[in-house]
Length: 105
Image 1 (cartoon, one colour):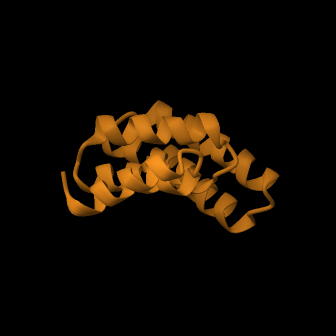
Image 2 (cartoon, rainbow, N blue to C red):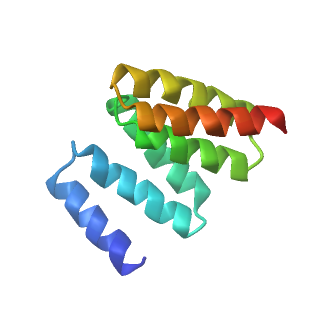
């Protein structure tokens, strides 16, 4: 296990209800190409913290990388709604752009 992941896992023990820590662990797994573990953490974040909008973009990209286009489209669509609900128009725009690009392929 790499040092950053170890530190994040330790932080998770101290702050089990911190969306950012779980998101950061997922991102660390993405960087290590451990997609199953990354997916697991992204799903935890979405289930416990659906308002944490950065998750939608990163999970969509993970689905794209694994050629799971239907899932990517679904997550981008949900992300647009979540971002708009959070009044995060910048992220809503980024998610919408990712969705348009994916649908145009």
